[in-house]
Amino acid sequence: MAPLSSINCHSYSYSSSLFSSSSSSINGQQFQRINFSSSGIPKRLLPAKVFSQSRKNSYPDVVLMQDGAVAIPVNPLENETSFKKVKDGLLSSITSAKELKETAGFDMNKNESTVSITVVGASGDLAKKKIFPALFALYYEDCLPKHFTVFGYARSKMTDAELRNMVSKTLTCRIDKRENCSEKMDQFLKRCFYHSGQYDSQENFTELDKKLKEHEGGRLSNRLFYLSIPPNIFIDAVKCASTSASSANGWTRVIVEKPFGRDSESSAALTKSLKQYLDEEQIFRIDHYLGKELVENLSVLRFSNLIFEPLWSRQYIRNVQLIFSEDFGTEGRGGYFDHYGIIRDIMQNHLLQILALFAMETPVSLDAEDIRNEKVKVLRSMRPIRLEDVVIGQYKSHIKGGITYPAYTDDKTVPKDSLTPTFAAAALFIDNARWDGVPFLMKAGKALHNKRAEIRVQFRHVPGNLYNRNFGTDLDRGTNELVIRVQPDEAIYLKINNKVPGLGMRLDHSNLNLHYAARYSKEIPDAYERLLLDAIEGERRLFIRSDELDAAWSLFTPVLKELEEKKIIPEYYPYGSRGPVGAHYLAARYNVRWGDLGIEQ
Image (cartoon, rainbow, N blue to C red; front, side, top):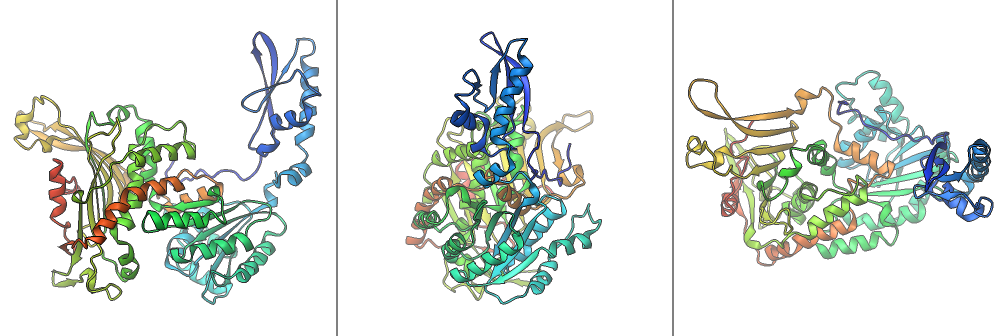
């Protein structure tokens, strides 16, 4: 098995072997096929299009195949001559490097293309702690193209040297790859530059465009903008980047960080504004949880293992739990958090996206659109969330071990009378044939007893279990449970019942455990590495499409408005506890026990 930290980086070169040939038979007639490589030729210059537009009269007997190949009818005597004639004729139409460049704006030589990555909001915490380190990790793994440039853009006044000094403090090499680390860092930092400007200034972005062109050196330019800025200035930045700093002859893509609005109305307005300046294909809405190793492994676990797929339905699964907990409070982020709350911050995006991936039907393929189509079907099949199926809480001050832990409202950036929930639990249902009646329980909270994100799948009790007397009246003790621990200490384990060795008949609960740290010696790539690489390569599978976003907000907006309009008071829970008692009553209503109560270490 390939090591986990080995990222399969797509090649940025284009194949010089543009075709291969093979023999086949169609309706008894022998044909010689010419198969053209789509990776070496732009789509609109593939043989089928060239042939149909300009060569059809020259080769009336040539058959166009659905896969883009052409088939040449031949007889044994003329096989080689016919094949060579048509091959040379078709290739002469499409393999001129000059024509490829002039007609398609596309270069077959990787040395003549470049990627410029601009981090908008480069002086912020996200850029310093996540984005720049992820870009360096990709560079260290040789996953970035030969020609690339990283630009920081923010309002802060800073020189190139000051940016490099700031970035260098957060860069690290993988534990298993420390060779030439400082050398690699120096090489990476030499490609980092800075431009100071306002986010709503066309003039400043035009200046940025000039600097980008200087570093692109006349090559085919592809540009990626990462918006690491507050949502209220998204549109200004997108407008300026699109009109004043987009690529003239390559692609331009924009990564947008959450929050994507705070309800259906604001989200729709944001999407509408973005689409005034960008096509949907240019917008990459990032949810970093979708880039986590164990979340990406969900579809592999389910669709490539025969033992799981037949069990993945209401017939065998009793409930599914999606649990997110942090062992710290807002820590000075209260001003931002108070405007959104835990439901918008975690449940409406991270946990709901994981739920959609978990519950979706088998997609037609691994193509981004096929996967996202299935996720949207799940979201649209979900039952509206009722207020009685939601519990909210807020952490209060608590003294433990002589240490006083603050309440949420002790944060100076939070209003003293704030009702914003720092904890929420909810019961959700999917009204389709596979999941009808199965409760999907979510809970997320801050200032809890541990830091953890996991999916827990509790299976139904064994009907007519011969060993029920060994479990007593508590049948939950004998429940099989599949646990996918997303973070920390990544693992997948299955809880089973087995006999304890000895002369008696005593049952025990054991784990069939895939512990990533024990199984794989390589460090797991950060989620931002995978997502940045996908954005550079145009892979949209792990990014959120606009109709996904609409469906997610349609589910949560009504209950959020009801909570706020009725001014529901959250249940208070001590800092460092397991959360409000109401969450346990909610689970009990659906005959569920939270799986993390007796958590395994």
